[in-house]
Amino acid sequence: MDFGLTEEQEAHRKEFFEVCKELEKKRPPSFVGFEAVFEIDECWEFHLHCAKEFAKKGWLALAWPPEYGGTGTMMDRVLFAEARGYHGIPGADIFGVQMLAPTLLQAASDAIKKEFLPPIAQGEVMWCELWSEPNAGSDLATLATTAIKKGDEYVINGQKTWTTGAHRADWGFGVFKTDPAARKHHNITFILLDMKTPGITVRPIPYMNGGAPFDEVYFDDVHVPAKNIVGQENEGWAVVNLLAGFERSGMSEIMAMFRELEGLVKYCNETKRNGQPLARDPLIRNRVAQLACELQAARAIAYRIADLQNRNEMALMDASAAKIFYSELGERFAFFATDIAGPYGQVKTSRWAPMHGVWEKAFQECFITIISMGTNEIQRNIIAWYGLGLPRMK
Image (cartoon, rainbow, N blue to C red; front, side, top):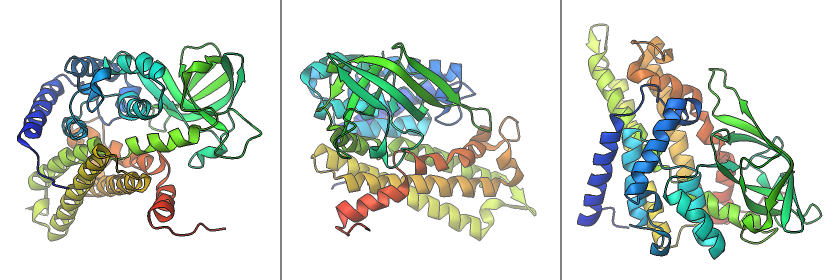
């Protein structure tokens, strides 16, 4: 692909960055790390405010077909993610805007599209992903929560866990076993449901540091209209694989690291040890340069993903490769930055905390992306099986 931008794309990128720069001025001081959106009330309110601002400009529907209010291209979506990531701006619901909407556009019926896409584009409805279960994580096809059809409804019973932001969400999308007797991968259905439906109980899963962005969700005879399925009954696995490709380019996370790299360079230039700035240490200079090169590579991969999606040529292995690279880069970055900061890297609520404690938080949470969305071990299997044609172990 040609990694250069057209004049029109440059103009769009400039506007995205200008708007996000202004919104950054209103960002709460407590907004440190993506998960603050789900943990802190004022951060959630800021998220909703940004969503409304973006909706006014049509930016929550970038690359959608015009008949559903869409504007722009897939590259515009990536440039928008760049701006939001660099300035640390929420507002584009990761589950509704970034994952569910493109999935609905490709796999849902016209009725489902007309009902659920407009509220997403207008920033009116926030979503969660009802995926993992206590005994079904990376091997999602072994899930046990059932949705048994009775008349024109499904009755759901079971439990989901590690559901990000379930306590904030208006609606959820998930996969449920709809035919317990059918074979694996042909017995689950992709269903949309109102999180206020009677029978749904949400309980937070607290972190050791006091945060609680994740939840357990219990279903006790939850009645959901049968019309709320995406794709075909018992063929939800195909929808799962489709959705998986929309959550792995990682551009906003990559650009957040670019901003953090600038902070790290500033810290190394201003902080002295043994009478010399850290920036003069050749080992530190080398490691910072390595991070900078890897970040440029990660951004190039994200651009390539957008280009492939724009041409409907992206394979599952392409999304897996991008996810592996940026998630493991995030871990290396967090470890290195905390190491450079020394004892100060363990501080968060203090004037001594570098970059308002972002490295302390990053160190504690960097493992999440490596595990979520299918562990990186699973992603490597996908690359081996579907990309390289290697045999499966028996």
